[in-house]
Length: 506
Image 1 (cartoon, helix red, strand yellow):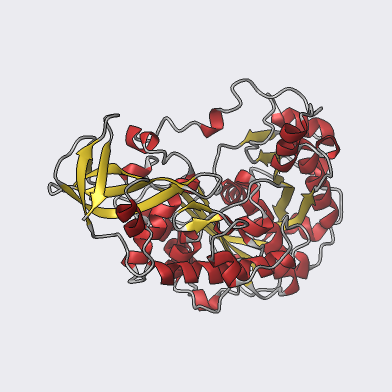
Image 2: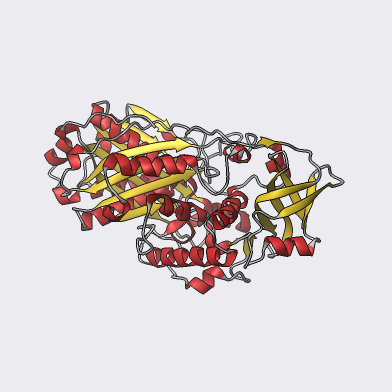
């Protein structure tokens, strides 16, 4: 990891002065607000939250990549609505970690004097877009950018991943879940119970969040048991354990220096200090990872933040651990050494609060600011993740009355890739048997399994993927057995008519 920056002078210490959120639940598509409108509302709310007068002073603006209705020039659409002219404007790449990285970068710009007032914001209207598709309505939001589906491109993935249907996060994160359960000595039933308990806690947090899209708390058994209202998506995850992108939400954050904030008359208890931050990434192609029961990049980021801030998990008051799927916060809380009674979110999670695609962590920052204003001597850790357990960024935030806030270094904002030394060779052809590293089963929208996929190692320690046909009931049942993990079992290979490998569990 990179070395920490020198400590900021007190007058350049970066602080959050305003946060804003927007929630839209239209009865029909034509009543819905566009992502640009939600961002505009969120930034105006953030300005008002900071006692006003900040919008015209913004000299650095980062906009989170918006997927639901991508415009040809989203930056111009936003600044035109607001009537502002930031000197620096940046439209971010795809990634759930980008809000944390942008906040980290904004803090560094404030600390160095490169910026005086910085803002980041994002918005999505996927709920309205889906309504419009059902209602056959034409949304009056301007023309989409050419090739607007490009952000969902998966050409960087190994052909085996695409051939077996493992090219979307919802089908890949279950591989980590299955591998982690085995590595932690859990049966699938025990792993599912832990996930359901955490997600029930998230639903209760979302129920108390006025900006959440789903404000109905769910009991553990409702989340754990698949059924008509909680259909299976990809084993072992049902619908209530996966991110929900069908939301209309926007959020924004305004950052400036301590000197400027105090000159504006903002009370100390309303300021939130930005502390140390770390970023790291895995190889982008998930097939080319060292293993599926850990993330070297996640470990480096979380341990780096703890080390640089000289804090242990029990000394951190609040956490926001990215929660697109249960394996992510379960891995993170183990790396951090959190106790079972420490909550993993202040926001409500990407299932219940909602998953505005790349922008969830902007809402998480806003929620964390609220907690730290209520407890101005407390501190909180925000951690975001992008793609396929690929991109990671974490940041410490501290209440305005916390002692020693000026002595915590920011750290460099650039992400690094930890050294990977033991990636197996990947092969598309193999014979004999493989030892299962991990697996999943994919389901259709009616809750019926379409096929299983096994990731395994040959006798020569080469990695390959193999399909389990839905008609092989014994093998499918073995992949979904609750009292025994498929990890470590043997599977016999054969080549199917389409040229892909298939396997049967032995």
